[in-house]
Length: 270
Image (cartoon, rainbow, N blue to C red; front, side, top):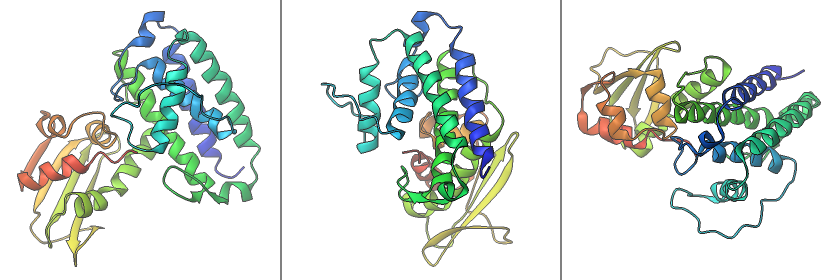
């Protein structure tokens, strides 16, 4: 089967969510997560709602005031599912999530190679179906960590989810540095990520465009060294720009003002 690793990745993440949440007490579903405005129950409701939307279920008709953290149409749809399930016992939401993900996994396993390559809607715009499903890995894995953090069981589940998340956020660095932070012409910014997926990424602004480069003999304008876990948490908007820069394990050398702008723009998750 084409892209079997994606289906296996989703299954492992969804199974991990069930394993973490199923033993918790009823009141623990109300624990606040790092995802703005959402509890453990709300995160599960969002993941459940997205699976339902993928098979054509319309968003619930609910009457509520849209919160400030909702910034786009996708966010509005997500919030409707969250609000609709907010008064349900957490275990019922978890059971619905489990059943929905089993149906989704079977549907993915039945896709043909051509269907995996078909271009269609995704949260990032039109993209091949396998790219869309890879984005679901990113979303689900980050929400797994949201749940872990809320329950005071932090553990960056290593595997395909972590790899997709870190790779995606790494690929966004030229956009963050060039477009969001508007680094000056000639700037060279280096990110050193420390941890299991350690890497060094160097981005240079040339002719008004920021692009990743393999190496340079020129002086680096700014160097940021930080753990992988802090990097992706800032990329996902789970910690503030100030918390990212002020962390004892983050080291900044060079243009501090540019570092502040980059940290501000680093939250790229929709």
